[in-house]
Length: 258
Image (cartoon, rainbow, N blue to C red; front, side):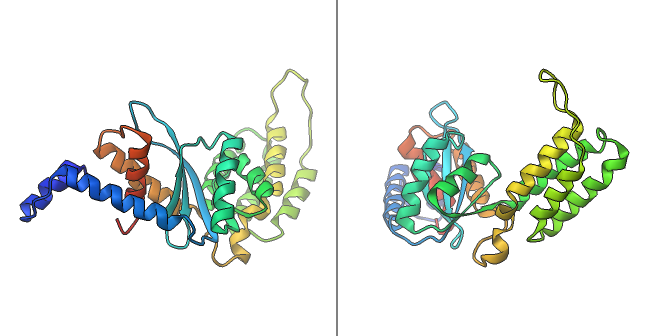
């Protein structure tokens, strides 16, 4: 709700508070939350990017979520596609909060950042299954029928997530023929399938981190839910007017206790 909307609701309950008083209370609460987040211990950190309406534009925001409490611990004015900026921002959080595992979508940059920061990495299974499923559906109409069994096996691997699934993917990659096209030609469907098998094998352990780390969730849903609340808040105020205002609004909207 907007501050004016809150004021109207409270007045109907016999509580007289003007929008400016409610605004000041919100700033104080956000400041308390930010101070409390400075040195809290967060072992598993969910990270996801979002685009939120503000000052007539759609600035990029990076959200860091405590996967234990399900509440945001930091917000950055950072695009998740800027690898250097994301790494610099996350490095401070990892060092200050004691983070040992990050949970993200399957954006390749996060793998590099996790390696550089020496933290574990869990790729959200919802994202993984969605894009892999879409790719496999596309292959069913483009590859020779005698190779459709490979798609069936990949579907089974993605569903069951065996710890040594990467070895099976490599074995499949070796079996799929590599018919090469000319340098100016697009990859054939079979070449694209080989690339998919190789990509999945290289990142397999990042899909399975939750299996040997009990505190690590298999999806990044908590972070996405917080972002959903943040976007809803942005719509009610018709977009934020400044970054500090957005930071306060997003932090309060994403915090369950608020």
